[in-house]
Length: 396
Ligand code: DP6
View 1 (cartoon, rainbow, N blue to C red):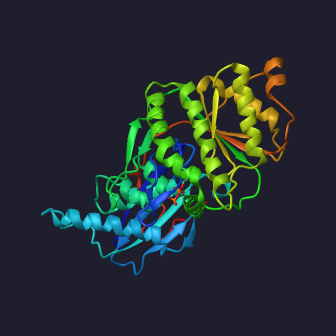
View 2 (tube, protein in one colour; view 1 turned 90 degrees about the vertical axis):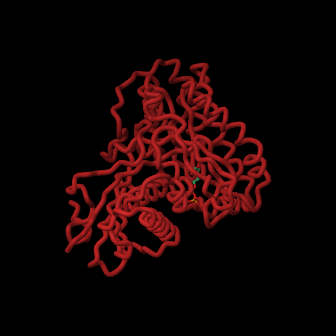
View 3 (cartoon, rainbow, N blue to C red; view 1 turned 120 degrees about the vertical axis):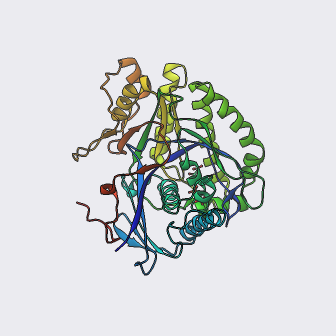
């Protein structure tokens, strides 16, 4: 069987100026621009293999080893767009007759290196990875964030590394609603990220449905999109360029808080933060107050997990504060994962001022990571998720 296969990996991103609300649901055009930090793939990534062959009889998809529905409209939109770009490209070139036939069916296998149950946004990495992989398979280059956007809005920002802006754009066809890099991942080498995975129920309103209700009912969201975000975006770009953690951190927290305020302003209201999230917010503010400046900055997406930015020299101390505040339940699981964290002993004064009543087991684990690059190609065929027969490789 002749099978052509391509494998890519793509990162997760976390917004510091949030996207919430669409002006076009089909094309996924946002009501405001947004800005995010791409996280390092050593800790969080999606891997996708796409294969095409004249012998495949239908398009098929496997998610984390399980066969899944390939008919999902957003997945189909991405597939259609990549094939359209491939057709366009071939139409305008004379060579390329050996290129992969566009009529071949594709097999797609995708998996995350982090538990989906952890509630870490996986659709952004997933669609960025899908689009990067398909584009490579069909030999398409150029502006692909526009295609990834059709899978999930936030996915367009995972097409680039470092600090990334998603321009809302003005055109009704979405051609100018694309991601642009504000600064590469090497720009701010001291910046670190802790993901605090909290315990608790998983059920909540999904982003797509939630933001639609917000657009329909929240006057605060309208004001945010029209007035607040344009000002904040310009300010955030400046803070990043100047590596001004005080400015960056404060604005990150304010924007997360305003996003959750628009959720409360939605009718019926949406709650993504839980008691543990609010406990973490209060802890961050006590920590900053104790130090007399912004040392740590939290942000929360459509769920209760906290993502906390800080500079490298704060990590050990803050991790110890989290450990004291949310003593891990001793189930043998590693409490701190990802990049190494050195141990710190906390001064009595800090303990007294910052660590309130401990809540055992509230934080399941901490993932330590940093900004990272955009999608990567894996050239080594042994890393493909699909075998020579076009079916998922057995994973141990
Ligand atoms: C709160 O990109 O998941 O994480 O475009 O409908 O797929 P769809 O929504 P999605 O929304 C992400 C919302 C957010 C904020 C952000 O990432 O900017």
